[in-house]
Amino acid sequence: MTRPWVVLPRADRSLVRHTLGEASPYGQPAGPFRNRIAYAAVHVVADPFAEPTSAGDARLDWDATLAYRRYLWSLGLSVADAMDTAQRGMGLGWAACRELIQRTAAEARAVGGGLACGANTDQLPPGPADLAAIERAYDEQCAVIEDAGATVVVMASRHLAARAADPDEYRRVYGHVLSRVSRPVILHWLGEMFDPQLAGYWGVRDLDRATDVVLQIVAAHASKIDGVKISLLDGERELALRERLSRHDVRTYTGDDFNFAELIRGDARGHSHALLGIFDAIAPAAAAALGALSRGDQQEFHDLLAPTIPLSRHLFQAPTRFYKTGVVFMAYLNGLQDHFVMVGGQESARSTLHLAELFRRADAAGLIADPDLAASRMRHVMATRGVAA
Image (cartoon, rainbow, N blue to C red; front, side, top):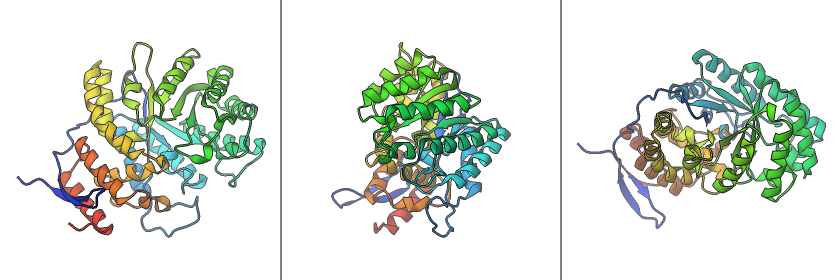
């Protein structure tokens, strides 16, 4: 039987015929998982027929967006919504996020799916804002999320970063937010590789000093903090912070899309839970691996996730903030949405060579669900970018 194939470009400008391997082998795992909490930070599906509008006025294909969340829940994963993976701060504004949170929460209740949602300050105009306005913005968004029945993820605020604030101002704002929430939240430390506007977050440039500020906030409000999501792409730093967080009985949620497998697996000193954008793109493999870990089979966990690491490192390569393009492209290739149109035109944020290498690595990782469909769609995308079959 002839395997499907597609012509792909290489960096030397040559064109090479790529023959696809077998279809993804993953079945339906029996989640939820017993020994790890696992959130997939999920993307949104843009309305492909919407006219371009100003930033923050994105229109979504609600049926496809919610269907994708049901797909993740069906695998046993929890969903983290209205996060940076959903293009928060890249075209998806607060009005659309509020509707997204409310719609997703209704779906979560219907299927019994786990849900956390991001609270930010992006209803404010861009630029610095006074601390009282930042606190009110956080309060508004936290209230919407809690009213919906979801866990709050307190995201990093561009408005707070834009003040060039000192650590005392961060301690004030986070103390205010944590004093007002009714249930424990997840704090999100998003590094500047994901969002350059967050450089110097926590009021200092030095990461060791920034870590101290985070730990001071945790120590003062530990009863209101479920965990801290760390998105710094630095495994050693996460290990060191994880050890110190554990003294306050606060979880670590890895946001490290480079080193996630070893951080989740852990060792005798502990482990990280997961809140990851890459889990959107590798959901079947991630769910199967977490199922193996639930059974105590660390070798199978490693064997299932090891082939996904090269793909993840490619998707999140610099400029890391454009990783969403690869996440959405994976969903399109696998037939989980019927177009490759993104909020704000971000489908053009990655090069033709980048998408070609993504395709090769996804195939090598066994993450192509239907090789015939994926080949057909890849040929179409390559043709629009000047690559003839």
